[in-house]
Image (tube, rainbow, N blue to C red; front, side, top):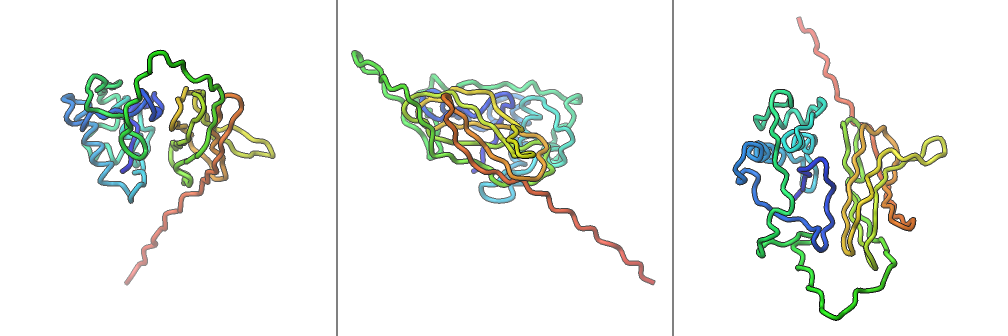
Length: 247
């Protein structure tokens, strides 16, 4: 399974406590034009997935065209997905003003937050008379990053980092850096996000990355850092076949 973001302006929530994922069901079952269009786009994205656990090129740009009325800026993969789904590529031709669901099933006791390994148990109710923990030290660890290999040519690349938070809550941001002329330069960064004890997830979006070696840095309060390498390679050139004249 591969998940795609359906809200351009929000980051991936943490998957502990009240900040877990909540499932609203198929987009096409929500009963409005925007979600019907999103369902068609999602079906095309799934059909074009290049392999297990691999992102479909242009998927998020095509999705954000519907959910956020964001232009694809001529991304050929995204435009092809939209055309196959019967969605106008141009936002001037059609705006969907799609609804954005915030904790849609909070009142339904049958729903659960989802973690990387499956449903998460509901947080335990506080015990009356027991004081909260006085632990103030927050530790970050167990970093997992994807994708680790990116090809040039994409209008934007979205990197995700999953990590553990122990001891106490933290304020964390995600940076993409590279070495340039002997100096470390930040090429993209996310806004600091509060993460609770448990598993944290953050994303950062970078635009038109040149080939080279990069570092994805999880930066926590108090200077704590986790690092993972990212490689950007050149996209393979398309071979040109020459036609031979025969007489």
